[in-house]
Structures are given as C-alpha cells and as structure tokens.
Amino acid sequence: MEETSLRKRRGDEKSIQSSEPKTTSLQKELGLFSGTCIIVGTIIGSGIFISPKSVLSNMEAVGPCLIIWAMCGVLATLGNKDAHPGKDPLLHVGQDVGALSVQGRVATRIPLNACVQMCVNWGLRNVQRPELRMRGTVVGPGSTASSGERGSLDQGETSLVRGPLSLCIPGALCFAELGTMITKSGGEYPYLMEAFGPIPAYLFSWSSLFVIKPSSFAIICLSFSEYVCAPFYSGCSPPQVVIKTLAAAAILLISTVNALSVRLGSYVQNVFTAAKMVIVVIIIISGLVLLAQGNTRNFENSFEGASLSVGSISLALYNGLWAYDGWNQLNYITEELRNPFRNLPLAIIIGIPLVTGCYILMNVSYFTVMTATELLQSQAVAVTFGDRVLYPASWIVPLFVAFSTIGAANGSCFTAGRLVFVAGREGHMLKVLSYISVKRLTPAPAIMFHSMIAIIYIIPGDINSLVNYFSFAAWLFYGLTITGLIVMRFTRKELKRPIKVPIFIPILVTLLSVFLVLAPIISAPAWEYLYCVLFMLSGLVFYFLFVHYKFGWAQKISKPLTMHLQMLMEVVPPEEAPE
Image (cartoon, rainbow, N blue to C red):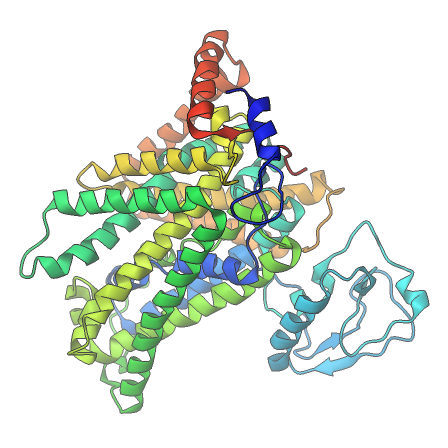
C-alpha cells in the first residue's frame, strides 16, 4: 500500500477520536487536568510504598529521613521550577521588573500566602492575552494600564517570568522554559539536539530507548504483578513464571490501550491517578489521626544515630528520587498538550508540590505506627501499615497499590513512546517508528517498539541492579540538559521564551546533578559504572554507521522493512512537524 493511497483514504474519513476531520499528525488531546494526572500518576508508582526503607537504611534516623524526602521534592521542583524571587516577602503586582517602566502604575501589595492562588487564577484567565504582556512590566490584578500603555507591547519577548506566575512561586520551571521555548515532544532529546547537536541527543535516545525507559517500565509492571499475585500465594512467594507472565500481559495491555487512542490512554491515566490518590489520602488521614492521639514516640530523639556522610546522603537522595521519578514526563508530550505555554508550567506547579506534600505526610504516617527497625524489616511498608491500622479492611492497601503501579506504568508507556517517535522523526531510529496510525492518530509503531524492549527486560532474573547503575546516567543527562538551557541563553538568543528563569538556578541544578553523578561513584566505586559509560559510548558506533554516513546496504534493508511494516500497521509519516 502506498503512502498516497493511505493519505487519500485518510482524507475521506474522520478520526475515531473526534467527529471533526483531522490531519495525520499527533493531536492536542490533553488539557491541564490530564497533564497534571500524568505528572502525579507517573511519579506516584511503587516507590513511596517501597523506597522509605532504602532512604531510612542510608540515613539511619527518622529526622534525616524526612528531611531527605523533602529535599528530593525540592530538587525535583528545582529541576522543573525556577524562580524570580524578590527580597520583599510581599510582592508588588505592577512593579517594574525590567529595564523599562510604565509611569502611572498602580501597585498593590499582596500577601505571599494569597499569591499562589492569585497567580493560578490569573494565569488560567490571562496567560494568553497579548495585551497583558508588557515590555519589562508586570500587568495583572491590582494594576491598571491605559490604552496607550497597551500599545507598548514587545512582540519579540512575551515572558511569563515577569508575571505573577513566576514571581509568586519560590522557584519556576527550568524544564518549563525549555518546553515552552522548544515545543517538541521527546523530553530532553530535542533540547539536547538544539543545544549541543545530534550526537548528545542520539546518545540520550540510545541510552533511554534501550535501557532506562524500557527497564523502568518492566520494573513497574513486575511490581504490579507481585502485588496482584501475592494474595493467591499466601505464606509463600509466587512463582517467577507467573509473575513474569502477568507482567508481560500488563505491558501488552497498556501498550495496546495507548496505541488505540491518545484520549483513551489519558482517561485510563486519570482514573488510576484518582484511585492511587484514594490510598494516599487513606494512609495520610489514618496517620494524622494516630499522631493527634499522641502516638509520637517514634519521633523522639529523631536525629540520634544519624549517618550524615556524603556517600550516605547521596545514596539516600538516589533512593528518594526514584520515588519522584517522572517529574519531567510532561515534556515528552508537549506536542499533544493543549496550550502548552499555560498548561505545562501550571501542571508542574500543581503536581510536584502535591506529590511532595503527600510523600512527606505518608512517611510521617508510617513512623506513627512503625519504629525505624520495624520499617526496615518490612517487605512492603504500606502493606504493613495497612495490617496494623486498617484491619480488617487492610486488603484495600495491596489492591490500590496495584492500581498505583499500573497507573505509573501507563504514564511511562504514554510518554516513552513519544521519545521513540521523535527519535525516529529525526532519523536517529528507524523511520517507521515516527509514523502515525492513519485511523487512530497515535504513534503506534513507537509504542509497540517500546513495549517489545520492555518485555525482553522481564526475562532476566533481576534487572534492579541494572537500573540502579544506570540511574547515574539519567542524572548525567538531566544535568547536561540544564547545561543546555544555560548555553542556549547565549547561543540561541533569538528563541522566544514564554518562561525565562534566573540564570543562577540552572547553574545550581547542574552542580547538584554533578554531585548526584559523582558522589556514589567516589564513595562506592564499581566496575558497573564503567560498563554503563561504555554502553552509552557504544551508541557512537551505530550513529556513525547508520545515521551520519548512511551506508547504502543499510538503506536497502530498512526501506523494504519500513514499507512492509507501513502496510501491516496502516501508518504514514506525520503531515507536519513542529518548528
């Protein structure tokens, strides 16, 4: 089947996701609520139900453990958020924050505790109103602007950092600046491509597509399978064959859902995010009730015996950040987000602080019923909590934890498929991986490719160590991406930046990334880190063979393969790519 015939038939039909005719490209199906659910639903997986042990084992005391959880939330927030903080705790709406000022401005002093609500409400209503984007001046509630002042718009730079949205939050988004400056899907990939060229971007896609993303997807589905199988094998461990078979079935089911419809995938994400918030709220309320009843014994002398070495802190941060992993997932689907200039930063502003608060309160709840020793000995912290507090209804904990893990797996599949799609579109993977389903307008080949790699990772006995050693690679690319943000401030000044962060925050995040990469290697060196680096660099061989030089024999193999897959899956290249 030729591409033209597919397009002709496509032009005579309407999308099954909507009654309106659409072009053959990724559609903007996701709003603010769905974007927030993707962030919250992907972050809250199995980590918070398992990781408290790992954080506590490194810190060896309750107080530092809670501080590490808060630090992980701040670090994730800094990775996404950045601020334009003022020295005065009372913010002046309408004050001049640039080189130019508008005379006759009415400045209103607004208490800081009312500022967040104001900025969200104002951002929802006015972030796209061009008359409110004044050159060098904030215009918002409590300020006035004459018609003459509205005429002094700067069309070249419409920066939200000069509005309440950035002034009211003690940090604004580094990744939000990148996501609104370069409105392409694929997470770090397009940012590395713009900042440093194709080689770093290719190495990121090579490492992510073949190790980091599919192995994480497989681990989440294995966790789901273990929670589901456990009630049927009381008193013993479920057979590995059963666990792996169910995990593979979960991967296939999730991939099928996301390949069928973007909207269906987002609905599934919204439902499972709501379900996991139910168990989170149950744990938090139960713990706070016990705390109010005087169960504070485990918080006494909470810093006694703490391990505060550089190595223990860095390892605790690693384990805590595993539970926060997913904070940048919305950047992988920017092209499918409605009004990304508003919804991307707002979803992160809402999602990450919500998760941070939940995590801290859940840990407090755990410590109200378990000592540090008991928590370390527990095989599943949330299940132990349920047995002690919620009996005889403790069965709801593993049930909702299963919902939580399957929701995180769905979010991981939803976003990782877009990285495969963008890498294929840029010519760094098989071209067919960038094709769009004619009928369903989803990147079906990319999603299926990602799921097949994930199923392969289920076969080995243990892949947790692999993910642990490759976690330093993830932070290596995080740091490189934030460095790219700094570099593009000087090399790509012409790019419009709806959100612009102060330069010192990207520098701080880069230094923290270097710390997280080097500290575990220095404190506990292992050959596996070298193997990970060698694997990443081995991608250069494939890059020069198949991407840079494009040998003829490789093209002869890939072209018929692409044609047959295109006919089998009824997919075509996207009609247009974002600039």
